Length: 457
Ligand SMILES: [Zn+2]
Image 1 (cartoon, helix red, strand yellow):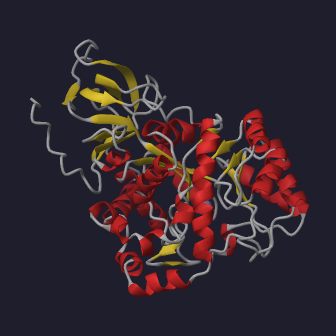
Image 2 (cartoon, helix red, strand yellow):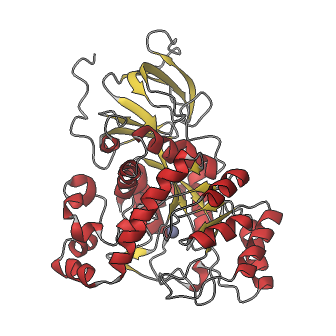
Image 3 (cartoon, protein in one colour):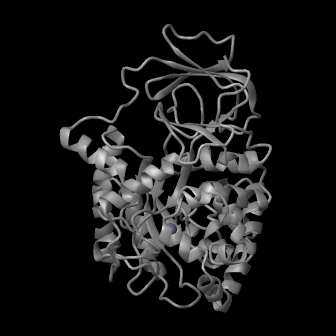
């Protein structure tokens, strides 16, 4: 709320939020550094920031400090790149419900502020956006409003009478009735310079009409003509294969009906298709009802609004989940999705990171990204492999070559943690400071051990 009011003032007077411009260089010395490339962590690192960029990475005590630099002692800490979700949403939920009138400037800005305070420094709103998203993206790029960096697919393209089931306003999704209309919708998205185009190919367990192949083939063809890449919602193995054969660039969910096979693995690798597992999606149908302990503590409760918390903690919610026949299907889908992630990762398929956070009241922005990392590790990835997917992997999907790793020339988007997440992935929650574009952000829930290290000067 306070954020929104301030930003309105800043916009009104055309001022930039206090940023790194003109500020002195900063040197962070002594931390263990996870750079996002997958290389083993380096101890006693030094990171030099100038403006919004990293200008040097080396060993503390050996790397020269720039003249006049502010030196920060981070001994005992671990530094890793900011998280990047390549599949999330904003402005779809008010209180504890999806609402067609939820997509307001204030709602999206509040969400981006929350993500940033949870260490998610870049967010992709993958469909169901109103066109004001493009204005917000520009203002975030210019630094005139605060919040996580925004990438977006704009509206996205679904079949008439098809998924997604969320109630949204007519100006949040295209539902083309013909191939000509679909191509025109793609050209409109190209005019907005979307970062990806989103399509939905699914029938939601037989409840909706699936997008016909000739329609998505035309969309993919037109996107490639317009130099845009396509990310598809997917559930079934057969659809995944057909989409990859048709030239889709990103699978935006797990294959969840059947184990992936060699044919899909070969096609994904040959065509360089990226895979975003979003394990949280299927788990969200039962985790809060069956494992209420995940909601314990400030790290969860400060990510949700009071109505959401009351809903997810209510007996009525647990009763509804217990009686919902979809839950058994989602449990099976979740188990298949976890196994498929391990298979595809081990086979060398490009894995990125997303949560579908913000899509409904059970997909929790901020908290959800840290929870997804935990699910990826329980699927069999090492903590380092999960982190690489959530940083370099997502940056690759977005073609955002300025972020995702901590190397000279990259953006200063990183997390200072009180404990090492390669030892326990849950340590990504131990946020001491979030750095975004060279600016220091106070985490919404600072690590209990966020006081300066005892041996600090
Ligand atoms: Zn989604």
